Amino acid sequence: MTATAATTTMKSFVFDGLNKVAVVDREVPRPGPNDAVVKTTAALICTSDIHTVRGALPVEHGRALGHEAVGVVHELGSAVEGFEVGQRVLSAATTPCLQCHPCQRGYTSQCQGALGAYKFTVQRDGNMAEYFLVNDAVGNLTAIPDDVADEQAVYAPDMLTTGFAGAEHAELEIGDTVVVFAQGAVGLCATMGCKLRGAGLIITVESIPRRQELSRRFGADIVVDHTAGDTVGQIMELTGGEGVDAAIEAFGFPQTWEAALYVTKPGGRVSNIGYHGEVAEPLKVPLDAFGLGMADKQIWGGLCPGGSERMHRLLRLLQSGKIDPTPMTTHEFGFHEIEKAFRMMENKEDGMIKPLIRF
Ligand SMILES: [Zn+2]
Ligand SMILES: [Zn+2]
Image (tube, rainbow, N blue to C red):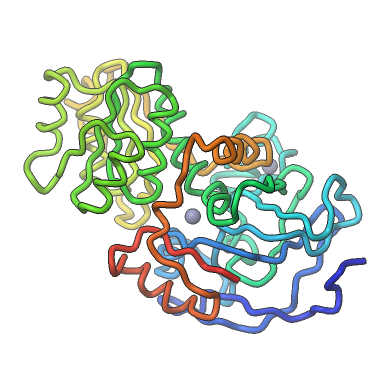
């Protein structure tokens, strides 16, 4: 049935208890009727994997980490049509069922309930493994065009879709002013998204020189260094005291969250793509930043949109050369070095932004 059906065991990089990770031997997953099993060729480690190992989410001991991977079709479920064994594919980090009520309402990231489309690692094994299973493959599996390399395509499953969602939820109109807080990989992708959406002035907030440089390269007009003085004050001054049409919070800390509310002008939008579980306190909405509750400001917090239609659109941008996220790949490792790569990512050692893992 498949070219490599004889392969039954694989290596998998797993959560091994709080603050512990391990490489273990596992059975290669077998697909149910609607699933596909993919042989991994490349993956990116995500800060979300670090959060998971630190206990951000209740995850079963021994669960495989990872949700940003590309590969080739290894085995298809009996009901999966439109793909072939050996074909290059990916799936988004979120894999919605596309049938439940939240999915039908268009909120596929909230499949079957809050954040429910985030199934890799949370509900079953992730894809930092030699093989991985994709549920509801007809709607989630996406063919990678021949002229898009693995190292480009691997940005689509989470970084691009999440960053661009930040810009989309900011509802940017051509010529708008926008600020993006933090220029890690997701923030950098949000900056790219603001440029694609036609923002007239893109301000970003970042202090690390390498990230500042990438920020300018991806579309920032002005990079504000938050270590050089009051961030809100700097942004207000840059906008003539008016504030921005939209603020994108890609950091996930109370200070940046509140700053985003302060710098957004009345009638503007605050778009959150930052993970706020690290501090784990209620998010505050200061009254003076929100017009005593009546500022006509909108807040939208969203999780990584998935589905193959979304992935096709992102791959099209890579294919046409309109974007190139690969300068964010600061390091490259073989899968046998995964633990080393993960430990470096924990503290973003050696200026690490995204480490690419080759299988
Ligand atoms: Zn991720
Ligand atoms: Zn669903």
